[in-house]
Length: 64
Image 1 (tube, one colour):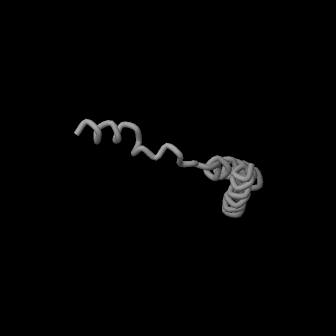
Image 2 (image 1 turned 135 degrees about the vertical axis):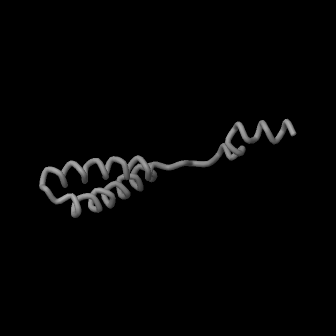
């Protein structure tokens, strides 16, 4: 029973899991897309463009 409690407090024991940088890239891209979209009054266009740019930024960061 103590072994199970220790495992649950450490997050499942999968310490070698690489989280990647896709989320960081998406956050950066959304920020850029929202800023440009608000400035140009065309948020519906720039938000998905920002997400696409963010995914590519995250993938580029994962390559390193």
